Structure formats: structure tokens, C-alpha cells
Image (cartoon, rainbow over all chains, first blue to last red; front, side, top):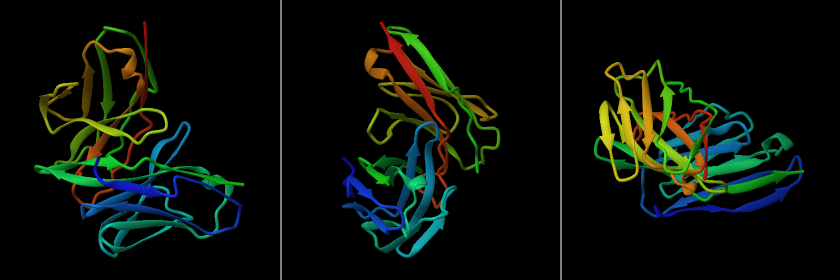
Length: 114
Length: 111
């Protein structure tokens, strides 16, 4: 257990509404990531962060924004949710191991946009 | 970004050795190769990591040739509980890098 919690774990919302998913860690690790997972697509990187207020885009960042105002929290926001954003969202943190690190994932947040 | 290519799926019988190969032709000098396992409704979890040659731990071995353009995850004597999706990830974890997963390999183990 790497001390990662995601909230909410499940959410159903309507098209056009804003949604914020939260990833919280208890160990103050520097690198945090948001992925989405859809059948047949594996895990796709949305955004990642390498420190407070330091974020960058991943491969599928359109329609998503992130914020990291403190080390322990990495927020993913869908400003206006669309049905194509129905997915399972995973947060991950990178925990250093020697010269590199390994990713630890949260339990996922299942989002349904109607 | 180091793009990875893996077989979409593999089948095996319980007790056999399974080898899953990942191709990563444009791997960078400072990239490590990491394999993850994912069960349904769970996030991926770390299996093994290496930079070159061979790495072995209690659950798997990782073979990396000298040119590092591919890697092979070896699972000895698989059981039904090894049925999962396996991902190869190439990147400098612990750095500000875009850690991009491929589509993964779905391993089905049967009796």
C-alpha cells in the first residue's frame, strides 16, 4: 500500500457538467500521473506532475485539466464532461527505488457520463 | 517517447513457462524497462524492472539483449492466478517523463 487514495471511486454525471477527480497520497512523492483506461486501449496518460504547480500533458490531454497546489493532492478536472470521457481513471505515483522508480496505482475511479 | 509493441494476447496451460516479448526500438539511453501486471478492476502492479542483461526476482525473470530494443518477461510455471494483462513500460521512472503504456498482453492460463 503506497498510501494512494482516489475519490470518488464511482461517479455518474451528465454531459456538460464539470467533474473533478482527486488523487491523494500520504508520502509526499514528487511524481504523480493520471491515466484513463478503456477497453482495447490499455492505459493512456492524460497528465502528469513533477512537483507543486509543475504539470505537463500526456497523450490524451484534450478536455482535461489538472492542478497540484500541494504535494499530496493531484486533481483531474473535466470542465465539461462528454460521453467519450466515460472511462476508468487511475492515479499513479512514482516511488524512487535506487536510480529509478516504480509506479504505484490507486484503485481507480469509474466515471460514467450520460 | 519510447513506443512499445507487445502481442495482444497469449494462451498457456498451467505449469508451463510463458515468455512475453516487448519491442521498444527507440528506447533512450536513460530509460529503464518495467513490467506491470493488471487484474480486472484493479490498477497495475509492479512485477520486475531492468536496464540490461538479465534480472530475476521471486516471480519473474526479465531478459534484455545488448541493443535493448526488446525485452522478454518470463513467467515460470504459470498458474491460473497469473491470468492477467501484462504491460511493458519504457521510461525513466522517477523523472519528469511521460510514462506511456502500450496496449498490453492479455495472458489466459487454463488447466
